[in-house]
Structures are given as structure tokens and as C-alpha cells.
Amino acid sequence: MAIYDLSSLGTAQMDELISFSFRIPKTLAASIEATAKRLGVSKSECARRAMEEFEERLMHERIAELSHRLAAQSASAARSMEHSTSDGLLSPF
Image 1 (spheres, helix red, strand yellow):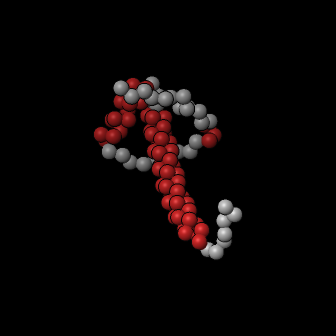
Image 2 (cartoon, helix red, strand yellow):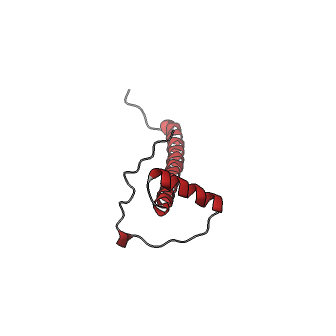
Image 3 (spheres, one colour):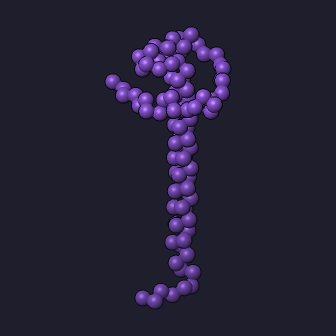
């Protein structure tokens, strides 16, 4: 059974919110309504939280992708520096 963190629900002030309208399938609307009722929040709050979580997941995925690319570039640079040990410099040892 999933545990839902509701601590951040309802934290936005009304003057910070704008209206956002879009069409969704009836089955999704019914699911959102049932979930909202079960959690004791409005349908709008339930949908808002889902969109916030989606955006957060996308951000984390993007950070992971960039981190992976940076690690690959760093490893490549390290390999190319290893080959420069024979560039004529003498080791003091």
C-alpha cells in the first residue's frame, strides 16, 4: 500500500495560483476524483500534486542524464591525461 506525503499540499497561497484548464479522459477524471476523495483533498489539489511530482521526476531524470554525461566526459579526459605521462616530463622518482 502506498503512503502519500500530503505535507506540501495546500501550501500555495491563492494569489500565487493561476487557472489551468485542459481536457482529460473521463476514466482519468473518475480516478482523480476517487483518489482525491480517499485522500481528503480537492480534485484540483490532487491533480496539482500529480503535476508537481511529474515535473520533479523529469528534473531528477535530467540531472541524472547530465551527471552521467559529465562523468563520461571526465573519464575520457582522465584517460587522455594518462597517455600524456610520456610527454617528455621526467618523474623525480
